[in-house]
Length: 217
Length: 277
Image (cartoon, rainbow over all chains, first blue to last red; front, side):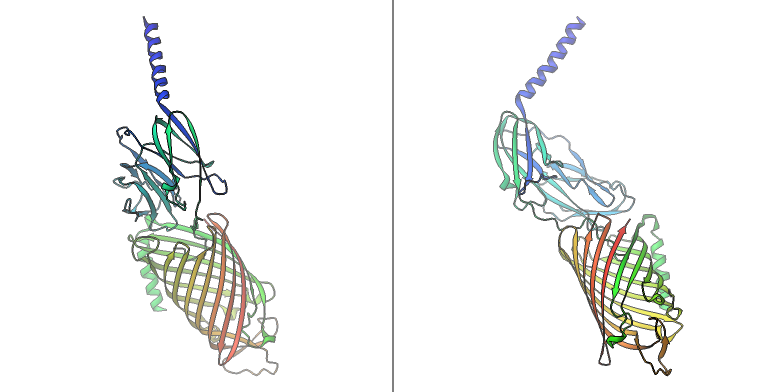
């Protein structure tokens, strides 16, 4: 009897996994620049063109401040996500954004600020520190639960996509054109591979001001 | 001097009220400098050129007083070692205190800095030993993600036992920074200095006269006199960031000093390496 129960349990798990796999797919995306160099920190996201997204869960994310830099440099989130901005440095930071998708300010603080910031509008949010002007990071807010960020090798996976028609787009802080230009429509039924070539603007930011005795600030 | 002391006492007091959230910086490095007219001579034959090595070290403390105001206190030490004219070898140190105020939020917001410094200079040629105090203000603004502009005024007072090196100067400066790549920046500067200089000339039939001193600074007897002069200084600097903390730089500078219709030109080239911890 115990054996029958155990066998049934294992079979039901395998069956559930099979059904899930039968209805979901993974898109492997490679993003490179116009010279063919892999691009890291590109946000890849798939927007449904038919059907509905699963009901949103409570979503949280973190953008830390370590050694006078924001970590990560690019943070993709879904609309409605609460983002925490802990300060892991032993000095104070003053976080702000002027971006239309989310204007906010967290005046001078150390440790963890009181409330997270909720990102409720789609788009790119440039985040800065008013004390250390070289500190810059980006939060990219998407209206889909299917998103990922490319790693050092320019690759990322959009996993567990239910079979449907999607528009897949790419965004990067230094991209010359809007992410709409990158849109590729695709009916997903099985695992797919996609390559993107994007044109990047040069980065004009010195990571830190060069040392020059007095007057760095 | 009384005003400087009061300013420093005030700035120290303000600074240490927020010491618990202080931010520190340590900078060190060295410059290799060539100057074509160390003797400030108008006659070509009297112009003395030399190379010098200038190691430096500085420690700074920064306290955010309000959302937009920051107090800073820094100590700066420098050596100056010449290859030919060793009497010019110098060690110096100064303490600078100031307040920087950013006029709002964001990287493009203008800022203003008020500062004062006090320091001492000790030379192999002891007649040069001096106390130097300065007071100044700088204003600046980032105009574009690649372009920054700053300007300022500084008053400098040098007190020495000898009248020759008891000097005061007024300086106005303007600087434009341009980011060439993500690791290279170019800085163009102009400074107008009105003040005293110690100018040298060779005078074989020397007879002492008021306002002049006979010195062997340049390994040969020369007459030095204090004159009031105007200097126009043009400089161009390229800074290459090696890592997030280290950089090398090269500067070319042309100083055109004029007094009573005579010209005292000086060209300088400086190669530097610095590291910020």
